[in-house]
Image (cartoon, rainbow, N blue to C red; front, side):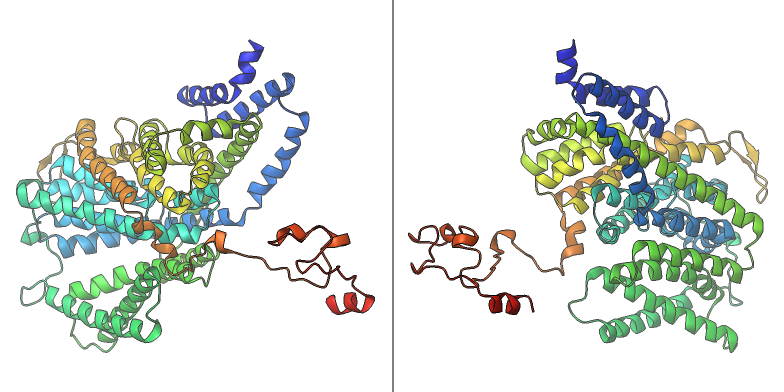
Length: 581
């Protein structure tokens, strides 16, 4: 029995962790208790040294002193201040009025607002609950299919997993030992591509099943001009002028070799600044050149967009670290809330309480993961995982496919934090040894982990939506009609098409790594094998009596001789003085 335990300590340890998690024990304490228990067993069996646990305090203090993790509370606080100061309501009302006259317009508005909330809150629960409370009653009022409405809201909320500044990306970068800025750059294109796929699906539903996504009726459109128009041409002219200014500004400010992320961020910042200045001048000078919807869109959407891309821009360009960018974003969110006159002590306290709770949650899991990994590596668990995964057929692609399938299946039972702290430390070193770009692996896992919020019956996004969706039939306050309740089955069925879209995105990232690896496109490619270190030859220093290096030369020069066969010279005191000047 003892021999069996010694031989299979690593798989037994991992299996025990899975059992504890399935039994419902807290993740942080399951990890830590498992690590300490098997550490003591290993010491008792003579497999581990008692000195192993002396490294625990260093690991705990290493977690606490990790400055990169400061980005978690900063970005969380920024998002909560923006969300609780009424930004979600303003955005949904404005974008809903803008796209509402189109079939599927409300659903498209939810997806766009979901992407913006993802780039500010970084928290799935805040996005899903906000949009569920605000937009679900409106979509039900105007006859949207319940499955489509529920699926759109839940899926849009999960965009905060992949769109920077995502908390998942911060944790993944920390666990993989890579730059948070690089992880943000790599996630940029997949995040917005996924947003586009969601919108494409809604457009397809509006075209082929128009009754499932109707347009809002004319009487529900509030931003109407005196001539009866909706003011969209005025908005299009404003956007065209802003785009022209942004293109000219980019040509003037950036060179041809600028990185794609730098181009996008700079363009959006210039576009937003131009639109905001023109709209502000029109309002201050009372020129009357812009319609109501044009002014509303500009003043509601530009400030949060400017804050988002200012924070991301400073990180992408290299002006600020992610931690500094998060601090700047938190201050910017407070300033915006003050300008809107919505900042009060109650809101501030709620945001700080939630931020502290979430940060403590992350740190406790990270400490538990550190205890577990210390013992797991001590019993050669890392070698067991490496042998298990490197022996898979198909090389790198086979490894990535198996890891993706494993993550997808585990997402039925574990949320993204648990996956990040348990799975990533095990597969990261193996992927690195196989030559896989770890940023690519991280983004692949982040897109895959989105499904953990959408999986019936355990998806947290579905639970969040269930908590705010009507459980009984109710009378609508605006139309006076009786609105049927939203069932749990409708929420589950509505999530399935979006899970399929997420899987398509996983396959796209897997097959086209350039979507992610563009983050290093402007970096010089260095072949390690071509690197040569020439230490020089200072007389006979380093050869002969100072070290036998003659064998480094081609030819038959023996030890104690230079390649020319001459006896090595001994450096004089003057030579030493010259060398250390």
